[in-house]
Image (cartoon, rainbow, N blue to C red; front, top):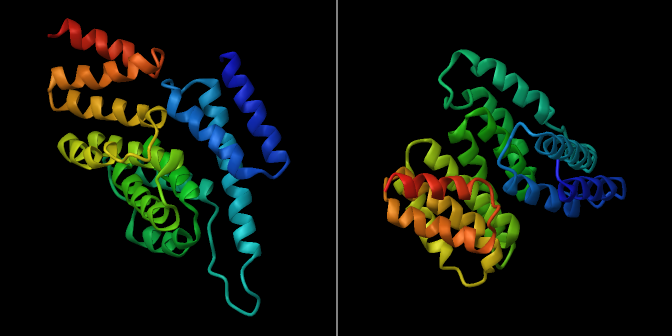
Length: 241
């Protein structure tokens, strides 16, 4: 674990203690977009802290429910995800959530913030449930588009993961079409677009457009040489040209 990752985790922990949850999640989401090894200690700790934040926020949401109204039973998302993983163990890896569980989540989904929807989508993505991840990401993007005047860092993370889920589903062309207009949005700073450049590179690589893939990945490397596995991907593309 690098010193920067240690510092970020410590900062996020302190912010959680101070109940500054949005600031803590911003740090943790940024970490997740930059760590390529999902089995690393820092990645696992960041995910654990996000799950902790999600539980706190869901508890707060439920405690604010108006009195006198029957509050729908909301299952703890962590337990639901583990249950889904078990249920899906004998199914194809990209199978969708069962209908009853989709209905069970419909009420919860209306109450989740864009950040919480992204957190849930990340969990689905890691389980290989890419269709489920896209469903939550579409809700999150719509919420940001309605509530904010621009995508911002959180919105960019949502867009990037949605495009990556499309690529994983074997739909890299759809991912490219989805990303193209967003990359032209002038209110997204260059530094925030790095993850979008990288994802566009993945889409072009999946489409076997090597020249275009190299161009997008080189754009990433020129700004952040150590971003994810961009160096290895460029090396592979150069050798296979």
